[in-house]
Image 1: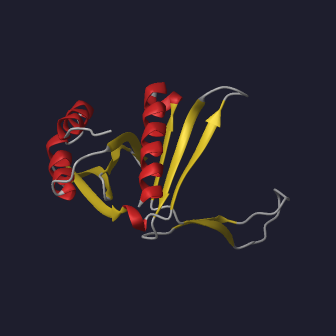
Image 2 (image 1 turned 120 degrees about the vertical axis):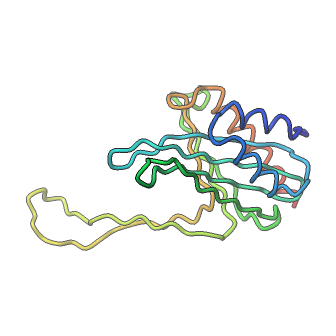
Length: 184
């Protein structure tokens, strides 16, 4: 399955989130390679008193997975909106794992949400929180507990937040990526 660069560009423009910047950065990262599949996911970000946006994109080429993250921020005295974009181009042979968690309503039902996790060993994420015991009135300091996630790209898509069609797109992209990495 080959996708034209115009298909990807149209999807980026339809999202309306810094489309010229996103397309330019992705086009540079693709370096002329053909596009086999792509997935673009927009989500709001909530910080103290502000609602922002975050977009993640994954673009599969015959030899690489190109990822993009773009965030906006309001800065300066004029409340100017700025964007920060990060890309990563990973050789398919370097990808260790493509995992998907499916959330379903009941037996025999299709997924209502899917979380995609792609690992190539570029990053680890630590999440720490205060440890607690079973006694809600306990005043003791129990230290911290946490987890480490080694997924370099983690993306969750749900029917409730993104619609059934976007869940299906995420699953289709996962199938293409999984197949491509098995052949690399």
